[in-house]
Amino acid sequence: MSVSVVAQLVVLGLLAVVLNRFVQSRRVNPQQLPYPPGPKPLPIIGNALQVPAGASWLTYTQWQKHYGDLIHIRVFGTHVVVVNSAKIANDLFEKRSNKYSDRPDIPMVDLLGWDFNIALMRYGEKWRRNRRLVHQKFRYEASLRYRPIVLEKVREGLRNVLDKPEDFNLHLRHIAASIIMSVTYGYEVNPKEDRFVTIAEEATEMLVNALLPGSMLANSFPILLRLPEWLPGMGFKAYARKCFGMTTEMKENPFTFVKQRMAAGTATPCVTSDLLEGIDTTGDVENQEALIKGVSAMVYSAGADVSVSAMTTAILAMVLHQEAQKRAQVEMDLVVGRNRLPDFGDRDSLPYVEAFFRETIRWRQATPMTVAHAASEDDVYEGYYIPKGPSFIPRAMLHDERVYKDPEMFRPERFLNNDGTVNDDYPMLSFGFGRRICAGRALADAEVWLAVASVLAVFDVTKAKDASGCQIEVEVKYSEGLVSHPLPFACSIAPRGEDAARLIRETDATA
Image (cartoon, rainbow, N blue to C red; front, side, top):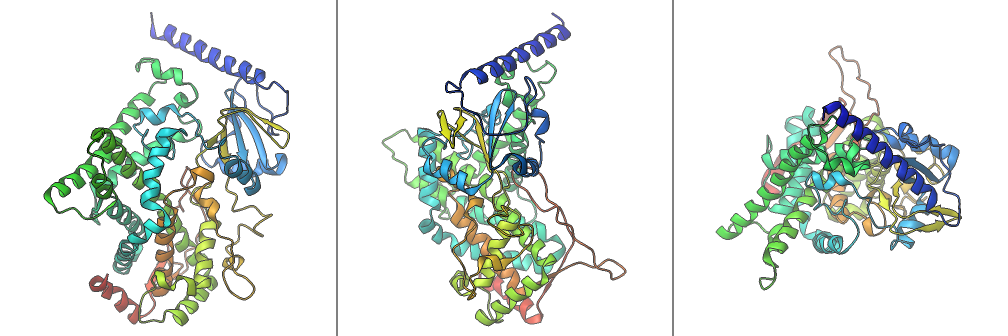
């Protein structure tokens, strides 16, 4: 049989699958209740052509103005519900978390070797086992033990910025990678090029690219997984093989590093060594080690990229909003002084710095589209029919103008009471919802806060100047994807005088 004939049969088979989904989706609503409103779908393919693969949250923002806070779309017979308000998210993901804590079935996740990632794992006993371990090591009380590491790595980052301010983005990435690798594996990251970090970043990037809407046809049509690789359109299989190899290396090599150090008696206390020491030797040791290996690998992939985005956004905010930066520095000088660096004990005494930090998280959320939830059973909400299985996408709600006036404006004052104290509005939505909320949020919060406070204390961040002495204007532009980063921008980062430079250098001996 020729390749062209086989290809035609495959196309016909896919059309049959799509048609079957379309027909089934019309039959499963026994009460004939309406779905939530949304753009009119085309026959068979639904709204597939209307949903962009990249910055889909911008499209959903426009749709919200026409269809409201709950939007229903179909993509090749698959239901997708977009949630546009914190109230609905709370009603579904918090109050009905027993129904809305699942994840959509994404075939490429297993093929890429990422089945260990609890953020993508289906809700069930396997997820609970993994979540227990992560919660055990990263709940707020447990995360306090990591603060000395955060302090050391942030101050190392300050020295790097002082030496080469033009490479600030690389230094921020190094801060995030150093913290998470030290906490998880007791491993010191090479500041120039580190294989552990590089492979983790590449494997994570390949995963993210495969999860973007429409990027991998196999996510919509799992039947493609059974077809031979030589057929047209099967390129995802070679892609998956490459990612699987990198993902395996990302899991195995740092884990082996810890085990070897433990055997030699030279291991630095860390999450992986703690979990390995707690293994029940009377049970299935191999399965317990596999669980620990997956949890440890997940920690880096889940946390570092988001922290880098938040820290880079803080630098961007300082460049564009000099008055806010100066006000934070005045408070810093009054409370902390100019003879030492801020630490965690100062946080409650720095309300404007806290407001600046919170506004950084709200203003440009690192994850404008969180990982989709899924309904584990049919449901009815506000008179709308919600079928079992659809993807629920919580959209960036920290720009809801009903909650935050002028949401595009950077205004730290929105997090302050009239008397200058911090209000109760913490942008917790940036960490997810319900049982799927980010387990490492306490560490991420501490890391980004200390980085922001430290930069404010010792650096002036301003617009860069070109060769003729004119300021280089900066635009607020962000990358597309599950984690959104500021696109590269120029800025000037200079110490706030020689005393500040000396203070930074002295951390080399005191960190």
